[in-house]
Length: 284
Image (cartoon, rainbow, N blue to C red):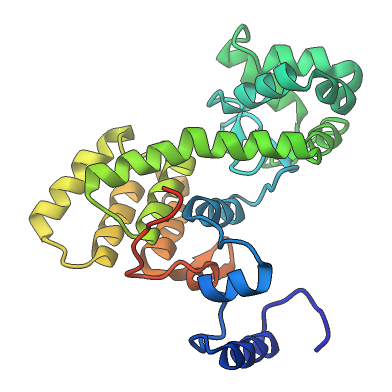
């Protein structure tokens, strides 16, 4: 079978054949047992898989930087650390504290400028003004050189990637776990949804979403986790301005139902081993 980097019908058939030979359930997908057999390592935790999905939605990977298209200033990294929200400054400060040579290598003679403008001494207005000065295009989505290359180079270092992942866990995953407990949710898709809300929208405690979701549960009495997730998706979308409301709703409903379209890409979350009804037991 030719290697093309795509999970297509031939790959599915090959997996089913392997599963049949090994006595595994013939699903044609890589679930826990098949993963362990093929990779000789434990299956990725629910946090790792949630991060992969949310990072795919965000679309910036470890290296891409985007401009002030949405009022967030500059956005960079695996879950879209923003300048306006303070997360970009926190990540860069951690990198500079642990690996100052990497900041110097990536940003060169502009290292002091980026550390100053993203730091706590810079005012919100100064941050946005700087972001606008390096943003390009009618929608300010692109970032001018050499800043685009600076951020790309920084994101390529393994040490920096680990710091990004640690931040994505220590800040946003903790919010998701806390919100899951408050809403008495325990399925893997529940955790993914609440993680995505934490990353993109600040969590369920922001804008009184937690209370609104609980009130909706009480009034509609959902009987399934999918119904509860759909309520949460709508509650979150209803707190978003008209410009991005539909984008947020499509993203959250894709998670709530297990499949959908986000930014013109089709998602089937069972491809990440995230199944409706599957209780989260590892990596919480």
